[in-house]
Length: 260
Image (cartoon, rainbow, N blue to C red; front, side, top):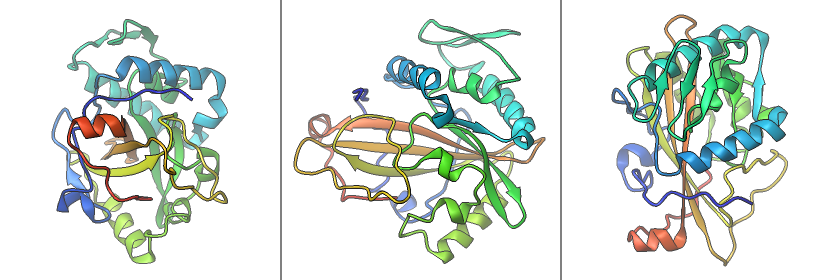
């Protein structure tokens, strides 16, 4: 178990009407897609370790998704050109933690995963639904990439009790309606009995309550944006973890348990 926690929480999805109800989508302002916070160095070190030691568990891509993944890398590079701490040249990226990452369009998702804190999931319309065709997912919150890879949205959300048929249709309509120039975001939160960021769980396994010991609140800022050339929708996940003790210092009460 690795303890990597933020000291501040910029969003509280359980407190606002716009984020409380599913799907809770909100417009994303320019420059708000890829975020950098005080946990950047530690999160990136953990990401790199997982990518080196557990790559099949955190990285999947279909051959058909390569054009979308390469376009995604272009979007990431364009976004970070003006972000503090980055320097992008023709062949590499200097990152805020002092590392240099070679730009590799043959491994676009692994390149993205070594540059930004966000996990990145490619959703492409196949038939009537969006399907998960590729991802760099180092910090899953109670799901496993191997089970979701090449699955449609309704199949992906099978274990989520609140994800009803009506919600599924609404979410699919929202995915269909996401425009290139109008990315969206939503918030999600879960409580855990430990702060580990890599929390995979199989669908058949029941997620146990954190118990009576110390707790950590995990909040995800989930972004959705459409790529212009391929039309793929990118689902991004920026993860915050704060201890119960730190939340008390900030006078933030732990919300009611959620499986959202």
